[in-house]
Amino acid sequence: MTWTNPLRDPRDRRLPRIAGPCGMVLFGVTGDLSRKKIMPAIYDLANRGLLPPGFSLVGFARRDWADQDFAQIVHDSVKSYARTEFREEVWKQLAEGFRFVQGDFDDDEAFEQLRQTTEELDRTRGTEGNHAFYLAIPPGFFGTVAAQLKEHGLADPDGDSWRRVVVEKPFGHDLESAQALNASLAEVFPSGSIFRIDHYLGKETVQNILATRFSNMMFEPLWNNNYVDHVQITMAEDVGIGGRAGYYDGIGAARDVIQNHLLQLMSLVAMEEPTSFDADSLRIEKQKVLASVKLPRRLDLATARGQYAAGWAGGEKVAGFLEEDGIRATSRTETFAAITLHVETRRWAGVPFYLRTGKRLGRRVTEVAVVFKRAPHQPFSASSVEELTQNALVIRIQPDEGMTLRFGSKVPGTAMEIRDVNMDFAYGGSFTEDSPEAYERLILDVLLGDPPLFPRHEEVELSWKILDPILEAWERKGKPEQYGSGTWGPSSADKMLARDGRVWRRP
Image (cartoon, rainbow, N blue to C red; front, side, top):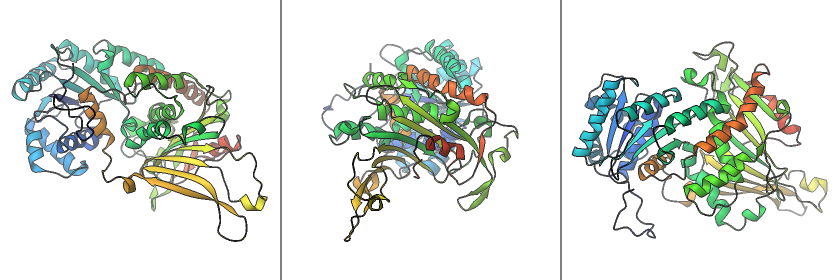
Protein backbone atom coordinates (compact mmCIF):
# COMPACT_ATOMS: atom_id res chain seq x y z
CA MET A 1 0.00 0.00 0.00
CA THR A 2 1.60 3.31 -1.10
CA TRP A 3 1.12 6.74 0.43
CA THR A 4 -0.93 9.23 -1.57
CA ASN A 5 -1.43 12.94 -1.11
CA PRO A 6 -5.11 13.36 -0.14
CA LEU A 7 -5.10 16.94 -1.49
CA ARG A 8 -3.89 16.04 -4.95
CA ASP A 9 -6.08 15.70 -8.00
CA PRO A 10 -4.41 13.24 -10.40
CA ARG A 11 -5.35 15.50 -13.33
CA ASP A 12 -3.32 18.40 -11.90
CA ARG A 13 0.05 18.45 -13.68
CA ARG A 14 1.37 21.35 -11.59
CA LEU A 15 2.06 19.18 -8.55
CA PRO A 16 4.92 16.69 -8.91
CA ARG A 17 4.78 13.28 -7.32
CA ILE A 18 6.36 13.37 -3.86
CA ALA A 19 7.59 10.30 -2.00
CA GLY A 20 5.84 9.41 1.22
CA PRO A 21 7.63 8.65 4.50
CA CYS A 22 10.64 6.46 3.73
CA GLY A 23 14.39 5.94 3.94
CA MET A 24 17.18 4.32 1.94
CA VAL A 25 20.04 2.02 2.92
CA LEU A 26 22.99 2.39 0.56
CA PHE A 27 25.47 -0.48 0.25
CA GLY A 28 28.71 0.46 -1.50
CA VAL A 29 28.88 4.07 -0.32
CA THR A 30 32.61 4.33 -1.09
CA GLY A 31 32.25 3.58 -4.81
CA ASP A 32 32.20 6.04 -7.71
CA LEU A 33 28.57 5.27 -8.49
CA SER A 34 27.44 6.30 -5.02
CA ARG A 35 29.61 9.43 -4.90
CA LYS A 36 28.99 10.70 -8.42
CA LYS A 37 25.40 9.64 -9.08
CA ILE A 38 23.33 8.32 -6.18
CA MET A 39 24.21 10.77 -3.38
CA PRO A 40 23.97 13.87 -5.61
CA ALA A 41 20.64 12.61 -7.00
CA ILE A 42 19.24 12.22 -3.49
CA TYR A 43 20.24 15.79 -2.65
CA ASP A 44 18.78 17.09 -5.93
CA LEU A 45 15.47 15.36 -5.13
CA ALA A 46 15.46 16.95 -1.68
CA ASN A 47 16.32 20.34 -3.18
CA ARG A 48 13.35 20.05 -5.55
CA GLY A 49 11.04 19.19 -2.64
CA LEU A 50 10.36 15.64 -3.82
CA LEU A 51 11.53 13.80 -0.68
CA PRO A 52 9.62 13.68 2.61
CA PRO A 53 10.96 15.89 5.45
CA GLY A 54 12.02 12.83 7.45
CA PHE A 55 13.84 11.04 4.62
CA SER A 56 16.83 9.10 5.97
CA LEU A 57 19.96 7.71 4.33
CA VAL A 58 21.94 4.90 5.96
CA GLY A 59 25.40 4.10 4.62
CA PHE A 60 26.85 0.60 4.97
CA ALA A 61 30.56 -0.09 4.38
CA ARG A 62 33.72 -1.48 5.97
CA ARG A 63 35.14 1.96 6.79
CA ASP A 64 35.50 2.96 10.42
CA TRP A 65 33.31 6.04 10.12
CA ALA A 66 31.01 7.84 12.49
CA ASP A 67 27.71 9.32 11.29
CA GLN A 68 29.38 12.71 10.81
CA ASP A 69 32.15 11.17 8.69
CA PHE A 70 29.54 9.69 6.38
CA ALA A 71 27.75 13.03 6.27
CA GLN A 72 30.99 14.70 5.16
CA ILE A 73 31.40 12.18 2.34
CA VAL A 74 27.87 12.92 1.13
CA HIS A 75 28.52 16.66 1.50
CA ASP A 76 31.64 16.48 -0.67
CA SER A 77 29.83 14.42 -3.30
CA VAL A 78 26.92 16.84 -3.42
CA LYS A 79 29.21 19.86 -3.70
CA SER A 80 31.11 18.24 -6.58
CA TYR A 81 28.37 16.53 -8.59
CA ALA A 82 24.90 17.83 -7.70
CA ARG A 83 22.88 19.29 -10.56
CA THR A 84 21.04 21.88 -8.49
CA GLU A 85 22.47 24.70 -6.39
CA PHE A 86 23.61 23.97 -2.85
CA ARG A 87 21.25 25.33 -0.21
CA GLU A 88 22.26 25.17 3.44
CA GLU A 89 18.72 24.76 4.80
CA VAL A 90 18.04 21.79 2.53
CA TRP A 91 21.35 20.21 3.45
CA LYS A 92 20.78 20.56 7.21
CA GLN A 93 17.37 18.92 7.07
CA LEU A 94 18.67 16.08 4.88
CA ALA A 95 21.81 15.52 6.99
CA GLU A 96 19.77 15.01 10.17
CA GLY A 97 18.67 11.69 8.70
CA PHE A 98 22.17 10.37 7.90
CA ARG A 99 23.40 7.27 9.71
CA PHE A 100 26.35 4.93 9.13
CA VAL A 101 26.79 1.24 9.90
CA GLN A 102 30.24 -0.36 9.70
CA GLY A 103 30.61 -3.98 8.63
CA ASP A 104 31.21 -6.62 5.98
CA PHE A 105 28.46 -8.25 3.95
CA ASP A 106 28.78 -11.48 5.98
CA ASP A 107 28.91 -9.69 9.35
CA ASP A 108 25.86 -10.71 11.40
CA GLU A 109 26.52 -8.09 14.06
CA ALA A 110 26.62 -5.33 11.47
CA PHE A 111 23.25 -6.37 10.01
CA GLU A 112 21.78 -6.55 13.48
CA GLN A 113 23.05 -3.00 14.02
CA LEU A 114 21.49 -2.06 10.68
CA ARG A 115 18.12 -3.42 11.82
CA GLN A 116 18.32 -1.42 15.03
CA THR A 117 19.27 1.69 13.04
CA THR A 118 16.27 1.42 10.73
CA GLU A 119 13.96 0.89 13.71
CA GLU A 120 15.44 3.97 15.38
CA LEU A 121 14.79 5.99 12.21
CA ASP A 122 11.20 4.74 12.15
CA ARG A 123 10.75 6.19 15.63
CA THR A 124 12.73 9.43 15.32
CA ARG A 125 12.36 10.35 11.65
CA GLY A 126 8.94 8.91 10.88
CA THR A 127 10.05 6.60 8.08
CA GLU A 128 7.22 4.23 9.11
CA GLY A 129 9.06 1.03 8.19
CA ASN A 130 9.42 1.97 4.51
CA HIS A 131 12.99 1.31 3.36
CA ALA A 132 14.73 0.79 0.01
CA PHE A 133 18.00 -1.16 -0.04
CA TYR A 134 20.27 0.07 -2.82
CA LEU A 135 22.95 -2.50 -3.76
CA ALA A 136 25.61 -0.36 -5.47
CA ILE A 137 28.01 -3.29 -5.14
CA PRO A 138 29.41 -6.02 -7.44
CA PRO A 139 26.69 -8.51 -8.51
CA GLY A 140 28.54 -11.34 -6.82
CA PHE A 141 27.47 -9.93 -3.45
CA PHE A 142 23.77 -9.48 -4.28
CA GLY A 143 22.79 -12.90 -2.96
CA THR A 144 24.84 -12.55 0.22
CA VAL A 145 23.36 -9.18 1.13
CA ALA A 146 19.81 -10.27 0.26
CA ALA A 147 20.16 -13.36 2.48
CA GLN A 148 21.47 -11.22 5.36
CA LEU A 149 18.57 -8.80 4.99
CA LYS A 150 16.13 -11.70 5.20
CA GLU A 151 17.88 -13.40 8.12
CA HIS A 152 17.82 -10.24 10.22
CA GLY A 153 14.25 -9.32 9.44
CA LEU A 154 15.09 -6.34 7.27
CA ALA A 155 13.39 -7.59 4.10
CA ASP A 156 9.98 -8.27 5.60
CA PRO A 157 7.65 -5.26 5.96
CA ASP A 158 5.17 -4.91 8.79
CA GLY A 159 1.56 -4.07 8.04
CA ASP A 160 1.21 -1.50 5.27
CA SER A 161 4.92 -0.62 5.12
CA TRP A 162 7.17 -1.68 2.23
CA ARG A 163 10.70 -2.95 1.64
CA ARG A 164 12.33 -2.76 -1.82
CA VAL A 165 15.71 -3.68 -3.25
CA VAL A 166 17.56 -1.84 -6.03
CA VAL A 167 20.29 -3.58 -8.02
CA GLU A 168 22.69 -2.20 -10.62
CA LYS A 169 23.82 -3.75 -13.87
CA PRO A 170 25.53 -5.85 -15.08
CA PHE A 171 22.99 -8.38 -13.92
CA GLY A 172 25.15 -11.46 -14.31
CA HIS A 173 27.72 -12.19 -17.01
CA ASP A 174 25.59 -14.69 -18.98
CA LEU A 175 22.13 -16.26 -18.91
CA GLU A 176 22.99 -18.87 -16.30
CA SER A 177 24.46 -16.38 -13.84
CA ALA A 178 21.55 -13.95 -14.38
CA GLN A 179 19.07 -16.72 -13.58
CA ALA A 180 21.02 -17.59 -10.43
CA LEU A 181 20.98 -13.93 -9.33
CA ASN A 182 17.28 -13.67 -10.02
CA ALA A 183 16.65 -16.78 -7.97
CA SER A 184 18.68 -15.51 -5.00
CA LEU A 185 16.80 -12.20 -4.96
CA ALA A 186 13.41 -13.84 -5.51
CA GLU A 187 13.93 -15.95 -2.38
CA VAL A 188 13.97 -12.74 -0.34
CA PHE A 189 11.91 -10.12 -2.19
CA PRO A 190 8.71 -10.51 -4.24
CA SER A 191 9.03 -9.65 -7.93
CA GLY A 192 7.32 -6.26 -7.60
CA SER A 193 9.82 -5.19 -4.94
CA ILE A 194 12.95 -5.79 -7.06
CA PHE A 195 14.05 -2.75 -9.08
CA ARG A 196 16.80 -3.32 -11.66
CA ILE A 197 18.41 -0.01 -12.56
CA ASP A 198 19.17 0.75 -16.19
CA HIS A 199 19.92 4.45 -15.95
CA TYR A 200 19.39 4.92 -19.70
CA LEU A 201 15.68 4.28 -19.22
CA GLY A 202 15.56 7.25 -16.83
CA LYS A 203 16.78 9.70 -19.46
CA GLU A 204 14.20 12.12 -20.80
CA THR A 205 15.33 11.54 -24.38
CA VAL A 206 14.88 7.78 -24.07
CA GLN A 207 11.34 8.24 -22.79
CA ASN A 208 10.81 10.68 -25.67
CA ILE A 209 11.18 7.76 -28.12
CA LEU A 210 7.75 6.59 -26.99
CA ALA A 211 6.33 10.11 -27.03
CA THR A 212 7.63 10.72 -30.56
CA ARG A 213 6.26 7.47 -31.91
CA PHE A 214 2.85 7.31 -30.30
CA SER A 215 1.76 10.95 -29.99
CA ASN A 216 2.52 12.01 -33.57
CA MET A 217 0.68 10.86 -36.65
CA MET A 218 3.59 11.74 -38.94
CA PHE A 219 5.99 9.09 -37.61
CA GLU A 220 4.16 5.89 -36.72
CA PRO A 221 2.74 5.19 -40.23
CA LEU A 222 6.33 5.19 -41.52
CA TRP A 223 7.69 3.10 -38.64
CA ASN A 224 7.88 -0.23 -40.47
CA ASN A 225 9.69 -2.19 -43.17
CA ASN A 226 7.78 -0.48 -45.98
CA TYR A 227 9.72 2.71 -45.34
CA VAL A 228 12.62 1.99 -42.95
CA ASP A 229 15.83 0.67 -44.50
CA HIS A 230 17.72 0.01 -41.26
CA VAL A 231 18.23 1.27 -37.72
CA GLN A 232 21.58 2.21 -36.13
CA ILE A 233 21.94 2.50 -32.35
CA THR A 234 25.26 3.92 -31.17
CA MET A 235 26.76 4.56 -27.76
CA ALA A 236 30.26 5.98 -28.18
CA GLU A 237 32.64 7.18 -25.48
CA ASP A 238 35.75 9.26 -26.05
CA VAL A 239 37.41 8.07 -22.82
CA GLY A 240 39.22 4.85 -21.99
CA ILE A 241 38.54 2.54 -19.07
CA GLY A 242 40.13 4.94 -16.57
CA GLY A 243 40.55 3.25 -13.20
CA ARG A 244 37.97 0.55 -13.90
CA ALA A 245 40.40 -2.18 -15.01
CA GLY A 246 39.34 -4.51 -12.20
CA TYR A 247 35.71 -4.29 -13.30
CA TYR A 248 36.09 -3.98 -17.06
CA ASP A 249 38.65 -6.70 -17.87
CA GLY A 250 36.62 -9.83 -18.48
CA ILE A 251 33.33 -7.92 -18.84
CA GLY A 252 33.87 -5.95 -22.04
CA ALA A 253 31.77 -3.61 -24.14
CA ALA A 254 29.06 -6.10 -25.14
CA ARG A 255 28.21 -7.19 -21.60
CA ASP A 256 28.64 -3.68 -20.21
CA VAL A 257 26.45 -1.80 -22.71
CA ILE A 258 24.78 -3.91 -25.42
CA GLN A 259 23.12 -6.45 -23.11
CA ASN A 260 21.27 -3.74 -21.21
CA HIS A 261 21.33 -0.18 -22.61
CA LEU A 262 21.30 -0.85 -26.34
CA LEU A 263 18.89 -3.78 -26.31
CA GLN A 264 16.51 -1.73 -24.17
CA LEU A 265 16.74 1.14 -26.67
CA MET A 266 16.09 -1.29 -29.52
CA SER A 267 13.02 -2.60 -27.68
CA LEU A 268 11.56 0.90 -27.39
CA VAL A 269 12.20 1.59 -31.08
CA ALA A 270 10.76 -1.71 -32.29
CA MET A 271 7.90 -2.39 -29.85
CA GLU A 272 4.23 -2.25 -30.78
CA GLU A 273 1.97 0.37 -29.24
CA PRO A 274 1.15 -0.63 -25.63
CA THR A 275 -2.42 -0.48 -24.35
CA SER A 276 -1.18 1.98 -21.70
CA PHE A 277 2.11 3.17 -20.23
CA ASP A 278 1.87 1.14 -17.04
CA ALA A 279 4.69 -1.24 -16.19
CA ASP A 280 2.98 -4.47 -17.26
CA SER A 281 1.86 -3.15 -20.65
CA LEU A 282 5.33 -1.80 -21.49
CA ARG A 283 7.03 -4.98 -20.31
CA ILE A 284 4.78 -7.18 -22.45
CA GLU A 285 5.58 -5.26 -25.63
CA LYS A 286 9.33 -5.07 -24.93
CA GLN A 287 9.46 -8.79 -24.21
CA LYS A 288 7.75 -9.52 -27.52
CA VAL A 289 10.53 -7.65 -29.32
CA LEU A 290 13.36 -9.40 -27.46
CA ALA A 291 11.72 -12.80 -27.94
CA SER A 292 11.42 -12.22 -31.70
CA VAL A 293 15.11 -11.31 -32.24
CA LYS A 294 16.98 -13.62 -34.59
CA LEU A 295 20.75 -13.70 -34.96
CA PRO A 296 22.38 -13.83 -38.40
CA ARG A 297 23.58 -17.26 -39.47
CA ARG A 298 27.19 -16.11 -39.94
CA LEU A 299 28.13 -14.34 -36.71
CA ASP A 300 31.69 -13.89 -37.93
CA LEU A 301 30.40 -11.66 -40.74
CA ALA A 302 27.60 -9.92 -38.84
CA THR A 303 29.52 -8.86 -35.72
CA ALA A 304 32.74 -6.99 -34.98
CA ARG A 305 34.87 -6.36 -31.92
CA GLY A 306 38.02 -4.46 -31.16
CA GLN A 307 40.42 -3.03 -28.60
CA TYR A 308 41.61 0.56 -28.68
CA ALA A 309 45.30 1.05 -29.39
CA ALA A 310 47.56 3.92 -28.43
CA GLY A 311 46.86 7.15 -30.27
CA TRP A 312 45.54 10.68 -29.96
CA ALA A 313 42.23 11.53 -28.30
CA GLY A 314 41.08 15.00 -27.36
CA GLY A 315 44.45 16.46 -28.35
CA GLU A 316 46.32 14.17 -25.96
CA LYS A 317 48.51 11.13 -26.45
CA VAL A 318 46.75 8.17 -24.81
CA ALA A 319 47.71 4.59 -24.05
CA GLY A 320 46.16 1.53 -25.63
CA PHE A 321 43.87 -0.80 -23.73
CA LEU A 322 46.55 -3.44 -23.24
CA GLU A 323 48.86 -0.77 -21.79
CA GLU A 324 46.35 0.42 -19.17
CA ASP A 325 47.15 -0.22 -15.50
CA GLY A 326 45.73 -3.53 -14.32
CA ILE A 327 45.07 -4.97 -17.79
CA ARG A 328 46.74 -8.23 -18.76
CA ALA A 329 48.88 -8.09 -21.89
CA THR A 330 47.01 -11.17 -23.15
CA SER A 331 43.54 -9.78 -22.45
CA ARG A 332 40.89 -10.58 -25.08
CA THR A 333 38.31 -8.24 -23.58
CA GLU A 334 36.71 -6.06 -26.25
CA THR A 335 36.41 -2.29 -25.85
CA PHE A 336 34.36 -2.02 -29.07
CA ALA A 337 31.46 -4.24 -30.07
CA ALA A 338 29.07 -4.10 -33.03
CA ILE A 339 26.33 -6.61 -33.80
CA THR A 340 23.59 -7.11 -36.38
CA LEU A 341 20.15 -8.21 -35.18
CA HIS A 342 16.87 -8.96 -36.95
CA VAL A 343 13.45 -8.54 -35.36
CA GLU A 344 11.32 -11.20 -37.01
CA THR A 345 7.90 -9.58 -36.86
CA ARG A 346 5.58 -8.41 -39.63
CA ARG A 347 6.54 -4.79 -38.90
CA TRP A 348 10.33 -5.27 -39.01
CA ALA A 349 10.99 -8.31 -41.22
CA GLY A 350 13.98 -7.56 -43.43
CA VAL A 351 15.10 -4.46 -41.49
CA PRO A 352 18.50 -4.95 -39.80
CA PHE A 353 19.25 -3.30 -36.46
CA TYR A 354 22.91 -2.37 -36.08
CA LEU A 355 24.09 -1.88 -32.49
CA ARG A 356 27.57 -0.57 -31.67
CA THR A 357 29.40 0.71 -28.61
CA GLY A 358 33.02 1.50 -27.88
CA LYS A 359 35.55 3.41 -25.85
CA ARG A 360 38.14 5.88 -27.17
CA LEU A 361 36.00 6.66 -30.20
CA GLY A 362 35.74 9.96 -32.06
CA ARG A 363 33.41 11.67 -29.61
CA ARG A 364 31.01 10.98 -26.77
CA VAL A 365 27.54 10.42 -28.19
CA THR A 366 24.52 8.17 -27.83
CA GLU A 367 21.91 8.21 -30.57
CA VAL A 368 19.26 6.19 -32.38
CA ALA A 369 19.17 6.69 -36.16
CA VAL A 370 16.14 5.44 -38.09
CA VAL A 371 17.36 5.46 -41.71
CA PHE A 372 14.63 5.41 -44.36
CA LYS A 373 14.67 3.81 -47.80
CA ARG A 374 15.49 5.81 -50.88
CA ALA A 375 12.61 7.13 -52.94
CA PRO A 376 11.50 4.40 -55.35
CA HIS A 377 11.72 6.78 -58.31
CA GLN A 378 13.71 9.99 -58.63
CA PRO A 379 13.15 11.91 -61.91
CA PHE A 380 16.47 13.70 -61.54
CA SER A 381 19.78 13.30 -63.26
CA ALA A 382 22.51 11.46 -61.40
CA SER A 383 24.49 14.67 -60.95
CA SER A 384 21.48 16.40 -59.38
CA VAL A 385 21.28 13.97 -56.46
CA GLU A 386 24.93 12.99 -56.03
CA GLU A 387 25.05 14.75 -52.63
CA LEU A 388 21.70 13.36 -51.49
CA THR A 389 21.76 10.45 -49.03
CA GLN A 390 18.87 8.70 -47.27
CA ASN A 391 16.28 10.42 -45.09
CA ALA A 392 16.88 9.79 -41.40
CA LEU A 393 15.33 10.55 -38.05
CA VAL A 394 18.09 10.80 -35.43
CA ILE A 395 17.18 10.77 -31.75
CA ARG A 396 20.09 12.14 -29.72
CA ILE A 397 20.15 10.62 -26.23
CA GLN A 398 23.27 12.47 -25.05
CA PRO A 399 25.03 14.84 -24.76
CA ASP A 400 23.19 17.24 -27.09
CA GLU A 401 19.69 15.98 -26.30
CA GLY A 402 17.18 16.38 -29.10
CA MET A 403 16.21 15.13 -32.54
CA THR A 404 17.30 15.77 -36.12
CA LEU A 405 15.28 15.04 -39.25
CA ARG A 406 17.41 14.75 -42.40
CA PHE A 407 15.78 15.17 -45.79
CA GLY A 408 16.56 16.45 -49.28
CA SER A 409 16.00 20.01 -50.47
CA LYS A 410 16.78 21.97 -53.61
CA VAL A 411 19.87 24.17 -53.51
CA PRO A 412 19.04 27.79 -54.47
CA GLY A 413 19.98 28.52 -58.08
CA THR A 414 18.94 27.79 -61.61
CA ALA A 415 20.09 24.16 -61.61
CA MET A 416 18.08 21.32 -60.08
CA GLU A 417 20.60 20.28 -57.39
CA ILE A 418 19.34 18.44 -54.31
CA ARG A 419 21.29 18.19 -51.07
CA ASP A 420 20.72 16.94 -47.53
CA VAL A 421 19.39 19.47 -45.00
CA ASN A 422 18.56 19.07 -41.33
CA MET A 423 15.59 20.13 -39.25
CA ASP A 424 16.65 20.16 -35.62
CA PHE A 425 14.95 20.09 -32.23
CA ALA A 426 17.04 20.62 -29.08
CA TYR A 427 15.70 20.20 -25.57
CA GLY A 428 17.71 23.17 -24.33
CA GLY A 429 16.18 25.50 -26.90
CA SER A 430 12.57 24.35 -26.58
CA PHE A 431 12.08 23.94 -22.83
CA THR A 432 13.05 26.28 -20.03
CA GLU A 433 13.28 23.49 -17.46
CA ASP A 434 16.45 21.40 -17.31
CA SER A 435 16.05 17.67 -17.66
CA PRO A 436 16.63 15.90 -14.33
CA GLU A 437 19.41 13.38 -14.09
CA ALA A 438 18.31 9.82 -14.84
CA TYR A 439 19.14 8.73 -11.29
CA GLU A 440 16.83 11.39 -9.86
CA ARG A 441 13.89 10.01 -11.80
CA LEU A 442 14.72 6.38 -11.07
CA ILE A 443 15.38 6.80 -7.33
CA LEU A 444 12.12 8.72 -6.96
CA ASP A 445 10.30 5.95 -8.85
CA VAL A 446 11.75 3.37 -6.45
CA LEU A 447 10.52 5.35 -3.44
CA LEU A 448 7.11 5.77 -5.07
CA GLY A 449 6.94 2.10 -6.06
CA ASP A 450 6.49 3.02 -9.73
CA PRO A 451 8.12 0.31 -11.93
CA PRO A 452 7.57 1.22 -15.64
CA LEU A 453 11.22 2.25 -16.24
CA PHE A 454 12.78 -0.84 -14.65
CA PRO A 455 13.46 -4.03 -16.65
CA ARG A 456 11.92 -7.20 -15.25
CA HIS A 457 13.88 -10.43 -14.95
CA GLU A 458 12.23 -11.82 -18.09
CA GLU A 459 13.73 -8.97 -20.14
CA VAL A 460 17.15 -9.50 -18.59
CA GLU A 461 17.13 -13.21 -19.41
CA LEU A 462 15.91 -12.66 -22.98
CA SER A 463 18.75 -10.16 -23.49
CA TRP A 464 21.30 -12.73 -22.36
CA LYS A 465 19.79 -15.30 -24.72
CA ILE A 466 20.51 -12.89 -27.57
CA LEU A 467 24.06 -12.04 -26.48
CA ASP A 468 25.35 -15.40 -25.21
CA PRO A 469 25.78 -17.04 -28.67
CA ILE A 470 27.73 -13.98 -29.87
CA LEU A 471 30.05 -14.06 -26.86
CA GLU A 472 30.58 -17.79 -27.32
CA ALA A 473 31.44 -17.27 -31.00
CA TRP A 474 33.95 -14.57 -30.06
CA GLU A 475 35.57 -16.87 -27.51
CA ARG A 476 36.31 -19.32 -30.33
CA LYS A 477 37.60 -16.66 -32.70
CA GLY A 478 40.92 -15.31 -31.44
CA LYS A 479 41.61 -11.75 -30.38
CA PRO A 480 39.74 -8.48 -30.94
CA GLU A 481 41.02 -6.26 -33.74
CA GLN A 482 43.08 -3.20 -32.76
CA TYR A 483 41.72 0.26 -33.67
CA GLY A 484 43.29 3.64 -33.19
CA SER A 485 42.15 5.84 -30.30
CA GLY A 486 40.09 8.74 -31.60
CA THR A 487 38.77 6.76 -34.60
CA TRP A 488 35.34 5.16 -34.99
CA GLY A 489 36.33 1.56 -34.38
CA PRO A 490 37.96 -1.34 -36.20
CA SER A 491 37.76 -1.84 -39.96
CA SER A 492 35.78 -5.05 -39.40
CA ALA A 493 32.82 -2.91 -38.22
CA ASP A 494 32.87 -0.94 -41.48
CA LYS A 495 33.11 -4.18 -43.49
CA MET A 496 30.16 -5.58 -41.53
CA LEU A 497 27.87 -2.86 -42.91
CA ALA A 498 29.57 -2.74 -46.32
CA ARG A 499 28.50 -6.36 -46.91
CA ASP A 500 24.92 -5.11 -46.66
CA GLY A 501 25.62 -2.10 -48.90
CA ARG A 502 25.43 0.36 -45.99
CA VAL A 503 27.74 2.62 -43.97
CA TRP A 504 27.84 3.77 -40.37
CA ARG A 505 26.55 7.25 -39.60
CA ARG A 506 29.18 9.71 -38.48
CA PRO A 507 27.55 11.28 -35.38
